[in-house]
Length: 218
Image (cartoon, rainbow, N blue to C red; front, side, top):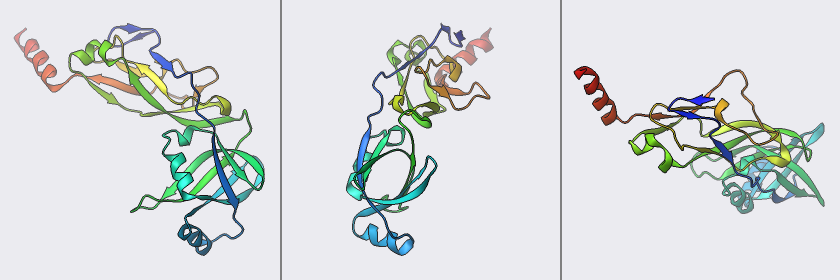
């Protein structure tokens, strides 16, 4: 496999450390509706619902500070969340958190029940490494990131923290596509109908002008 810019082979490394399993304590929510949810928020709690896995939806609520702390880990949405409620643990995957448009306080959260080895869809952050080893970056190229996250399908127990992509050897004009990425064992791209672009190395305006002048002189 040859990547534009003169590099062959796979250019991706993934972190061997998988996302931590986070634990959140919750209490059952008996009442639903806007009034009940407002009362919970006023008391420092965040209403939420757990659904899926062929079971009835279950209303719960969390201490706001604990939920915010979990959100601040940076990998909340690609982590398995063990919710402790009513003396039992429920394995879940976060699906959505609604925030207040002004204060950014969490207003409501949705969690999907999953089995220990369920196949799940997650969005995993992309990180780029080895800029110093890229001829293009040394020449002043700009890394144009098209996708900051990759949508993957993988085992719930094997969700990677992130996907690291090395820029080593890449020159100006190089394009990194999903086909260039060696994903972790058992993981695959959720997008299968096209070889989408993850990032490109774009020539800076000064380099474009210099190359243009050279072409005119020739």
